[in-house]
Length: 250
Ligand code: SAM
Image (cartoon, rainbow, N blue to C red; front, top):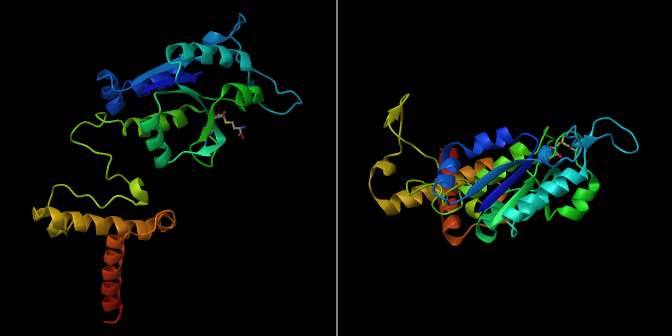
């Protein structure tokens, strides 16, 4: 998977590519990442990339020509890559989208806006998809592009290494991940649930399933609307109901 980020702040993105799991994935040639400065594609001697909006109004708008040139440059590196415009007006990014990209795409070229945004003709002519990371407005698209690269990369086999897995992550199968514990066995008088120390793999699996369901029910009940409970999940939920009933009837 090859990521190219078109930005006015390449150092910000280069630092991200130089750290943690993403850096390790790049070193192992599992992913590639490049930050490209949009300003390098401006043709005038002042290296202008923005201008005043037609019709008036506050702020500046990013000009289309440097972006077109920057996209052409990126496409020469990865002709099969999709061009993604980061915008709060785009389709909301989520875990399913991350899986879809990781499984089905070879490369992405991100356009990171700044100022008041980007000339409309870039949207209509040069972009394959518009993506938002949430219903809020940030000062630039870099953090949004990095959030997407980060979550897509950890779905690519080998990036997390053999010791970590994305298979039990929250939102896989529309459920939140189960509760996790590590040493010490007792912390502030709170012990680790005994079953996790039992070594019984089936019991541990069942406990985790129940924990995942309980957390989903308490924190994100809306996820049950996108994915109805399976037969096993219904059984666990019924058991939990019975236990709650016993508790309230005491
Ligand atoms: N005036 C624009 C609007 O209301 O739609 C917002 C422009 S914002 C200040 C500048 C840039 O930040 C955008 O062009 C986009 O690249 C990026 N951006 C801001 N919020 C974002 C979000 N939630 N998701 C993705 N990109 C975002």
